[in-house]
Amino acid sequence: MGEARTGGGKGAAAGGGRRRLARDTLSRRVILDAAEKVASRDGLEAFTFQALAKELHAHPTSLYRHFRDKDELILELIDDLRARSYGGQLQATDSWRDDLRTQARYIHEHYLRYPVFAWQMAARTTRRPTEFANVEFALDCLHRAGLDDDEAVMFVRVFGNVIRSLSAMEAGLHALDPDSRDRDTLAWELEYRRLPADTYPRLAGLTAPLTAIGDPKIFDHAIDMLLDSVEARVREKAAEG
Amino acid sequence: MGEARTGGGKGAAAGGGRRRLARDTLSRRVILDAAEKVASRDGLEAFTFQALAKELHAHPTSLYRHFRDKDELILELIDDLRARSYGGQLQATDSWRDDLRTQARYIHEHYLRYPVFAWQMAARTTRRPTEFANVEFALDCLHRAGLDDDEAVMFVRVFGNVIRSLSAMEAGLHALDPDSRDRDTLAWELEYRRLPADTYPRLAGLTAPLTAIGDPKIFDHAIDMLLDSVEARVREKAAEG
DNA sequence: ACCTGAACACCGTTCAAGT
DNA sequence: ACCTGAACACCGTTCAAGT
Image 1 (cartoon, rainbow over the protein chains, first blue to last red):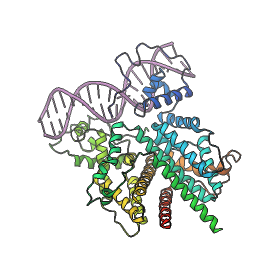
Image 2: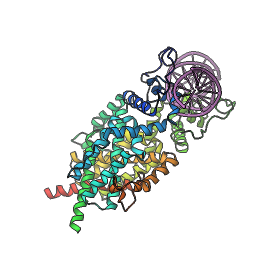
Image 3: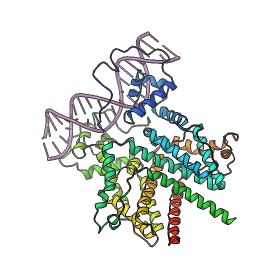
Image 4: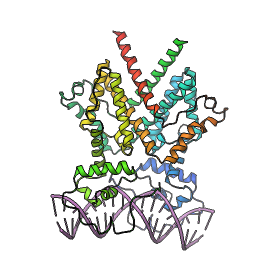
């Protein structure tokens, strides 16, 4: 909101008397690489076709030859980043629980590395190998744990949705401007504890400070609670039969 | 992306030779009501100052007298909607578990009713009475369950973050254009199950269909698993002495 | 005091024109 | 074929001017 823009200057459009780009300089690959660079360097607000074109020393409208629209570019980029970030890195060990936790951590880290696209990564289905491999891996872990198909199918979804949505929220928080972020964090630590005891007895009586919404510990706790719940179910099944 | 815009036409700006708005027609209250109307009726894309001004038969820039910027308007609106949606509706019963589940459901429904602001509702701290009351209520439930302060503080955060981020994701899915939504849902039900058995044995061998990302059952399952985990902790404490 | 008009610096996207 | 320029229909926001 109103922070300094990179662009502009005063000279002729896009950097003075630049000459025309050599034929076939642009391609999906080249554009995706530039897109990753711009997104990581300048953030969500700055991720525009004009900024991207500038990075490539090209004209904004040239990109339309290679991608139908911005949405197509983003979806493609999401898959590309995923593949490079944890494509084929997951290895099964002899502990299904550790494996699921490792997977959760990979995904979580990936979101924090590319907060710009967090929301889209969480909600869209790309139908591409990395996505397939993730689901396959989680299903395998749950199978090894001893869940049957119905339970595994539901849990893989609960687990996946919680991982992705929590990661997206946390990543989004990181992408917020630092001022509002600090104000929010402080609110949880201080403001909330000064509320009148008659209307908010529990809040007022708290001995420990409230954890802030963006606290990284929350993610690990949530994952562990879900895994505990699976383990309980597994034990229950063992006792039954 | 490219669907019909409400605005425009060809006549003079903002509806022909309209005359000036009577003095003091505008106020925070009036603007917020119009904002809710526009947001629910036309969705996120259409939620602009120009559309809002049109609804009010006012000039877009008039709104700046009453709100510093769009961000301030949205934050204020979020709190307003929350207060009207479940302000003071929560009543403690004799089951802390039911109470937490009811709270989760209220919040979930609220997000689905206003998907436009789902993301902002999930991540921002408004520091207003409805938010205070929600935290107070959840803390009270956990206290009644038998958790101590440290545990309650962490769990209230895990629980709240999961509720809000899952709700935001689901709401965002509902705000997607129907085409991509249908394609995604079908992908999970069909495409995923036709993958080659040699690379994806677990997926290929599934007897039950994969649940789609947006399936409403997921939310309830996630909540129940977390509550199970609290109950287990409570039992553990009781056993310890 | 409150509302409006003109203007600025941006967006994504289309389409005809240059090389 | 591939890149560019001009143009269109928007954005949020500022600030001087009308009533």
